[in-house]
Length: 122
Image 1 (cartoon, rainbow, N blue to C red):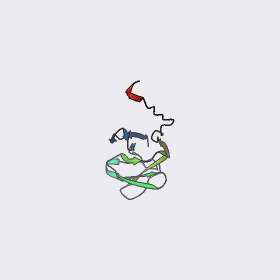
Image 2: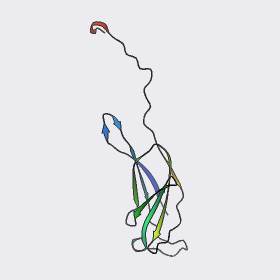
Image 3: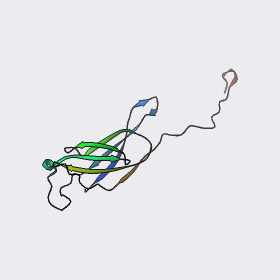
Image 4: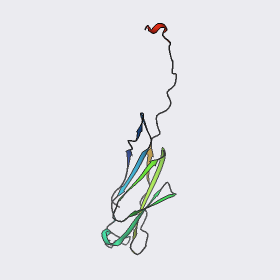
């Protein structure tokens, strides 16, 4: 595979000033050869793609698409692997494991003070 990229997309669902979640958009280029080097037409010879996230969550993506969006992914370190499945049901080789990270929300403010000003004077 020529390209496998992970793009973090900030979801703009806002309540007050706090954003709720990030999405991970995983994209790749379709293979044009088979493991043995022979030609492969991705438009007619691929059934679908498999995307494995964190070694346990598997997603199926139609062959006509080369993008998967994982919504509301939790903060922390993650990884993704992509593979193609041909129309005969044969799994292709797995891509390299691609690591990516999602930042957590901002921490809690500390050392908060409140000063009472009598009579409204400054």
